[in-house]
Length: 279
Image (cartoon, rainbow, N blue to C red):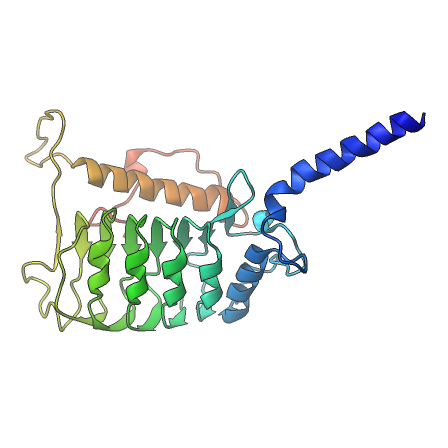
């Protein structure tokens, strides 16, 4: 009987170790999850009038059940999305400790202060959207270290200073929008296929100058007939539209509180502006 009880205890210990294994590596010597600490630092620096971050708990060892947080199968925080939540305050430098982060979406809020240079530590980040906020100061040159970054949108803020030449180092960058700030030149060569810097008076006074915005078409691997005199979309634009629609569905299905299931996803229901972005 004692042997059977011993086997049962051993099985439970092994099960507990398997369940917690992915989290243990994130614990400090005091047993605090580093990602929990980072997220609580972000929460502390923000003002949250609608309480969307109320279930973020500093005593938790697993933030994967928190609203606006997306985790991988290994229970690592890979996504943080709080768009259009009327958040204000500042973005804490502790965001740089979310070293597994791949997506950061904070657009359409009232967040102010500088863009944290610590964002440059997020080597896995491929999508960063801080547009339509109140960020001030210079764009950190450390963003040029984000070699996995594909989508960068900092438009409609109050950013100023020299154009960050380091952005020319991000070879994966497909979309760049720095429009409607107060940036100054010189302007580097963009790796991005689609870019927009209109609305910066020191760079583009009228917005019609050459080099203020544009899309570089990529060759299609097959022939498609033109429809109504309009050329077909290039592959990168199609991919960007699909990624944007995916981000929207991710927010509705996983991050919105309460969750909203969209049951009629089709091309006609995806609204785009002249840059093939959401209006």
